[in-house]
Amino acid sequence: MIVNIFCYNEEIAKQNKNKISFTVFGVLCLIFLIGLYFFGDKENHSLIIIFFGVILIMIFLMCLRYIKSLKNKMTAWVVLENGRIYRLIAKNNGYELINRNIVQEDLATNHLRRQSQINDNVNVAGMASDIRVMQIAAKYMSDPEIVQQIAEDIPNVPGVEVFEILKVYSIQKKKRFTKVHFDCLRASDNKLFYNLTLKIENVYTNYNDLIKYISTHQVVNGKK
Image (cartoon, rainbow, N blue to C red):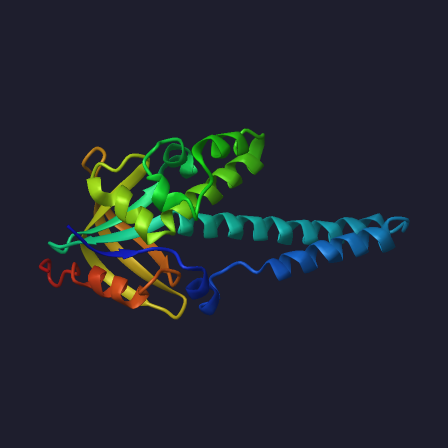
């Protein structure tokens, strides 16, 4: 039985400065356009290349940060009554999750488009398609009611990769994230992963409670 669910929360992410700022992104784009206007006819090509190169790199890094934030949104944590902790991640950047009819209409109505509309919207090329799919999957995984529904079949959740936290060796809590060193089990094939390191950003509901649950699996001298 599920006793607690931790999902991505926009306000918590914003409060802890873990949410991407589109204001900064907009300013960078504006600088790029202004630079294009003023430097377009200049003869100092080296300076122009450096200027535009720096701006493009910064925009690219912002895009990577946005994709990382989507991956956080596509992750949820679930705690069962027996104390077992699972990390749920949408498979294949969300493609498997949104192409399965696993969410009841009454739960999804106010959060997601109908399945036919979703399939139409993702039929575009390249990265735009990938990001659109991730955005839709993020809506699933950021809603506690929907996560409650899709997590009922742990460890065999369709469209979601499930990892069980087994042993935790160290926990380093920072202001914006917590670094955890641990072992886990992948439910789909019972494959064990040892000595992994994960930064759990402070973007989840009841974040402190999540870290407390994880700490209950911490080992001391090889024992919990």
